[in-house]
Image 1 (cartoon, each protein chain N blue to C red):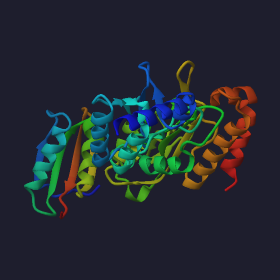
Image 2: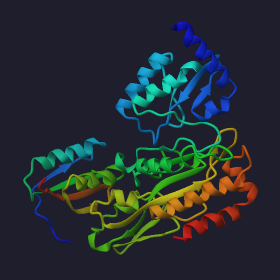
Image 3: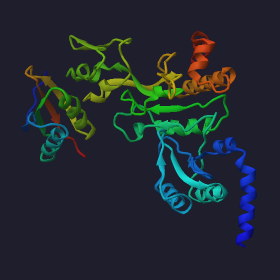
Image 4: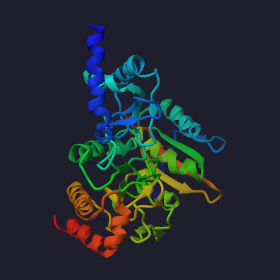
Length: 302
Length: 81
C-alpha cells in the first residue's frame, strides 16, 4: 500500500514540478524549501469565519508546519504544504468552506476595511462591495496583477490609493435648515474649511468638501441630507514602484455607475496593457486623457 | 430661543472621552422620561462626540450653545428606551 502511494506521488511530482505558473495561479507559492509550497487562501474583504479558521488551523497542523502567515493584503497563507499533498489539502480545506486564492497576472484578493456594517466611521458597506467585486472579477486573467481595495471613509484604514483600483466611501451632504439648532458643531468638525455659518445659515463650499461626512456624523439633530457614495482612484501601486492612485472622475453617488466604472477600468487594462505592465504604466503610456475619456464615458452613460 | 425647565445639571469638563459620554449616560439614566439635563462640556473632541452619542442613544438634543470660554452647554431631553 505504502509503495503504491509513493510511486503515484512521484509521478504527480514529475507532472506538476514543471508547471509552477499553474500552481501559482492556483494559489500555491513556491518556497525556498524544496517541494514546499505556501498555499494562499481566498479571503474576501478580510473576513474569515470561525469555522473557516478552525479548518485552516487543522490543515496547517496536519499538512503544514503548524503556522500560518497573514499576508499584507488580508489573505492567509499556509506554508510548508508538500507538493504531493496538494490535492488532499485542497479537499480538506474545501470541507471547511475554504478555497485557494490566486497569484500571478490576474485579479487578486479584494481587500476591505470593516466599513459601515461594523465601524461608526464607515460611509459605505465595504464588505458587500468586496464580495460583489470578488464575484465579478476574482482571478480574471489579465496582462498583469490587478488589485482592488475598498476603504469605508477618509480615515483610509485600507489605504485605497495603493491599489490599481481603489474605492473610498464618502458622503455628499446638503444642509437641512428645518432640523438645525444652530450649534455650530459641523463647522468645528469639518477639517477642510468647507463649512461656514453666517446668520444661522450653514453653507458648504463644494470644491473644499472631501466627502468625509464628519459634519453629518457629529450633528446632534441629523440636520443633513446625505448621499453615500464612492471616490475612486486608479493606478496605485506600492511595490518596486510607488505611486498613489489618482481620481479622474467626480464623486460617484450610485452603485450602478460604480460598477460601470470598474468594468471600464479593468477592460481598459485588459485591452491596452503590455504583459507584465501595471495599470499605472498602462495609463501613462496610453495617455491619461485617453484613459479619462474612457472612464468619463462609463461615468456618464447610465 | 425657548427656555427649558432643567431637571438636573452636570459638568463633564474635567473628563476625557469616553468617560465624558459615560457620565452623561449615567446622569440620563437617573432621570425620568421627559426630564431635561444640562451638560457642560469642553470644546474639541467632547463637543463633536457627546451630542452625537446622546442622539444615537435615542435622546433628544434640544440645544447646544457655545459659552465662549472653551466650553459648551448641551441641553438634552430624556426619551423612552
